[in-house]
Image 1 (cartoon, rainbow over the protein chains, first blue to last red):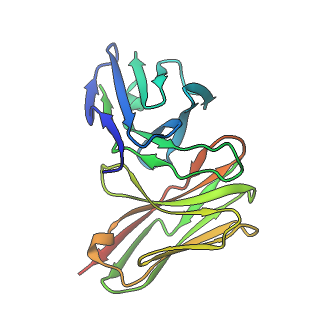
Image 2: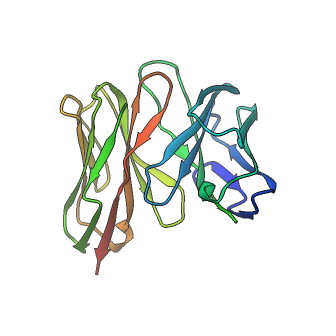
Length: 116
Length: 112
């Protein structure tokens, strides 16, 4: 149990559907992240939130829309996805002190997304 | 742009063997380096975090070293067990913000 939970664990959706992924961290952290893991490719950072403010958007298409209502919850809203968006979507959190020493990131179990 | 490479891509060893996994990165201006373990279809479990000012970290049978100037890190696993079978990922934090750049991982299989 890592302290970071994600729901749903598996999701199958059509290209015209709208769905949302949810992440919750129980570690009291102030930073949250979305990553995408595709087959045979390194994990890619998608979004970073610090104190509920988005500080990083790694050139992610607008069909992915993040939302961070508070420092414990992070959502990823999905609409009109493509089959190539099928991947494992991982959420992480950390306590970002803002100094030179960057702190350990803790990951959730991921949501396995399949787009038909 | 930071690039992280892990060698070998896959490794199969008999139980009890000591082994070394390698990670290299192109930009030595890192804040820290983190080793993770990922079981099939699962999320990542953090194993060790080495800050840029440190040379190594140890946790149980695991020892990670960091040579920042040469852009290298190694993960040493002593007395390997079948339960160690997993994919091991190396990631570095570079630049502003707490952004991790990952390697593609080493898939380890420890056989009885």
